Image 1 (cartoon, rainbow, N blue to C red):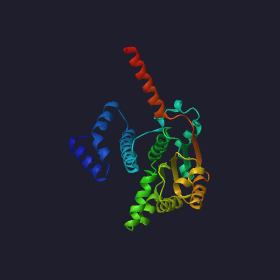
Image 2 (tube, helix red, strand yellow; image 1 turned 60 degrees about the vertical axis):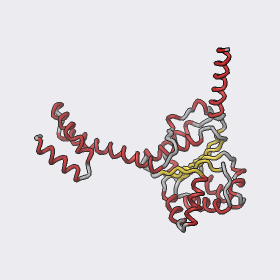
Image 3 (cartoon, rainbow, N blue to C red; image 1 turned 90 degrees about the vertical axis):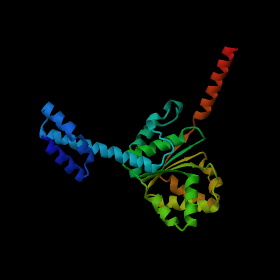
Image 4 (cartoon, rainbow, N blue to C red; image 1 turned 120 degrees about the horizontal axis):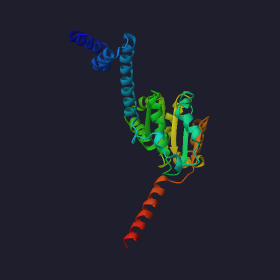
Amino acid sequence: MNAATHILLRENLKALNCSHMASQIEALARHAKENGVSYEEFLLNLTETELQARAESRLKRKLREARFPLMKTLETFDYEAAPKMDRRLIRELDAGEYIKEKRNVIFLGKSGTGKTHLATGLGVCACRQGISTRFVTGCGLANELFEAQSERGLSRVIQKYARYGLLVLDELGYVPFSKESAELLFQVLTERNERGSVVITTNLGFADWTQVFGDATLTAALLDRLTHKAHIINCTWESYRLKETLKKRREAGQEQAANA
């Protein structure tokens, strides 16, 4: 293939929005010529380059739009520190079938047990599968809804959160909501009921949710919707952060004793 043909081919590929193919055409053509690759295999390699690059760009966009505070995956979760974790269930959730079935996942447990890590990991899995995902704290969502109401944009914000394939709602229960904020959050979760999955992390047992939402009737209605066919995972193991703190203290004490 002569230089003029390369130039025209690159321009044609760019015009077709195949920029990655255009950037790799010369290298792949040279490889094909040196190794006797058939026309069909050369074209296959070229198109796979474009598809892979597009998939990587799509994943980056999904992860950026999800707004995870920290990038944590299920692969980096310390399962040895969570001996009671049902790894089989986590593998099933990793596959994303619960999202297709519009089922929720609720992580219950005290602070430091890795609930946010697991919830974020499921969110990352959803992004890898091309599912639109959004991560937000309970307080963050309540504040956004309250502000939207004051600006007469509440319906738009509720519909925005209803459209996500997966909503990850973190730290639900850490701070009580006002009556108005609880009702607004109820609207979002009701709108998503059986239409889209929600992954929730909370430090409270279901019996204590009234402390957060205030109204017992609203709380009961919300729990009825959220827990229906949900995967409920009790994180009953010891806090990672507490164990790490105690470990550092022991090491510091041992070092001081050795230097005494």
